[in-house]
Amino acid sequence: KQEVTQIPAALSVPEGENLVLNCSFTDSAIYNLQWFRQDPGKGLTSLLLIQSSQREQTSGRLNASLDKSSGRSTLYIAASQPGDSATYLCAIEGGGSQGNLIFGKGTKLSVKP
Amino acid sequence: AAGVIQSPRHLIKEKRETATLKCYPIPRHDTVYWYQQGPGQDPQFLISFYEKMQSDKGSIPDRFSAQQFSDYHSELNMSSLELGDSALYFCASSPRRGGGHEQFFGPGTRLTVL
Image 1 (cartoon, chains in turn purple, brown):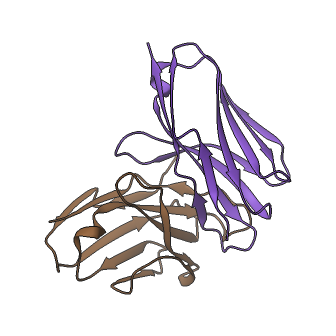
Image 2: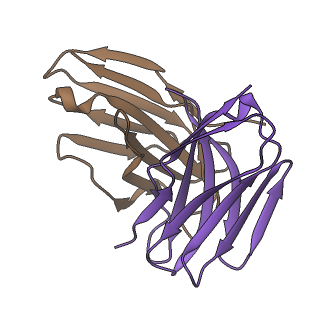
């Protein structure tokens, strides 16, 4: 059974720092991995989607990498801003599934001005 | 660009009542997924539909049922509501079932059971 773990559970950094969020998964047979952002009590905003054949994806200040063989993904945020404060979730679409996503418990990021 | 629409956005019900949540996928998306996110929890997959047929089932209670209609919108019906059903319910749509296609999430319906 696929399990997704995110470390750390919470992170507080000063504005301007570069930071890395980690996601690990137990079964390397995946179709893709998605990183989401969720503000308190709000919906899920898709940030980046990495297909299993890809190694990384970039969007603005965000860069996500995928190492399927080791079961790891990282989300790199450059030059963090207070507006980046949110919970970041990674989710896996497993190879044996019909498309449903399995989520990690998220990393709550706080960027202090 | 059109997004996934969910209604209502907020719903308050009493225990043992019923609730119906609606989801309107992005045009030309034929696959719909339902997820439940309890307070402080990660989203959990409930059920999915592809081309109006149930595709996959997750941790959906027997008190819940769902269907996808001819216009591809989907409804999640919840009966005999319990306090523990209070959660954020998300609908997501995808252009195809599985196989690595990106899922696009709606804003969610916040259900509060009193």
